[in-house]
Length: 307
Image 1 (cartoon, rainbow, N blue to C red):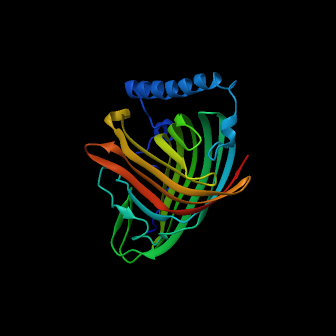
Image 2: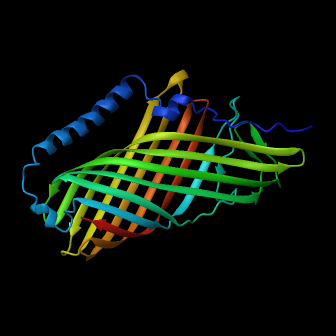
Image 3: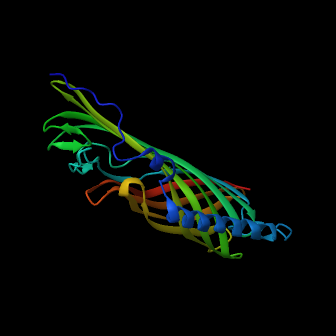
C-alpha cells in the first residue's frame, strides 16, 4: 500500500483568521475604536507641535532619524499541537527536542525610527528566523491527520517572518529621560512542516498561519551622560476573541527589550541589547484547542546611524 502524500493543510485555522484574526462583532468594534482613537489622538497632538523649536534634536535621545542593525543571538523554544479533523488530540511537538531544530541561531534584524515631532515617533522593523533540522522519532507523533511512527527518520522546518510597525507618544521627554506609550501591529508569518521517509513512501505535514497581532507597551529611556544612555520597553497583551462556529481564538503576547548604548561618533552609535518575545496562542473550542507557542530571547549587538 502506498501512502498518499497529503496536500498542504491548515487544520482548524480558517482563512478569516489568517487575514484579520477573525475578530467579529463587538470585540472587533471595541478593539478597532480604541486602536484608531490612540493613533488619531497622537497625530492630532503632533500637528500642534510642529511649529515649536527643535532644540530637543541636540539631546542624547533626540535623534530625528535612526536606523539600527542588530546581530541577534537568540535561544529559541517552539511547541505546536494540531488536532486531527475528527477531534482526536494531537501530540504536543517540541521542535527543538523532538525534531532536532537548533535551539540557538544568529540572525540580523533591521529597524527604522522617525521622530516627526518632539513627542511623536514612528517605528518600522523586520527580521526573519528560518530553521531546519533532522532527527529520528523517539515516540509516535500525531499532528493533524498525519502520524509519524517510532524510529522514523524525519526532517522538519519552522520559519518565522516578523514585520512590525508602531507609533509612540512621549508622556515625558526632556534632555535626560523619556517615557512613552506604544501602539502598533506585529505581523507574524509562521510556516512549519515535518517530512518522514517511511518504507511505504513519503509522509509529510505542512501548515502555517499569518497573524497580524496588536502590540501595546511602555518604553523608557535615560541618558546617563551625553554619550551613554539606556533604553527599555515592555509589552503584554492578552486576547480572547469569538470566531465562527462557536470557536475561540485566545492567547498572550509578551515582548521586552533593554539596551545600553554609546554614541561613539556624531552619527554612529553602538549598543548591547537583550530581547525577549513570546507568543502563546490557541484556536478551538471546549472539545479541544490547537496551539502554537514559540519564544526567543537573548543578546544582540547593535549598530545605529542617527541624523
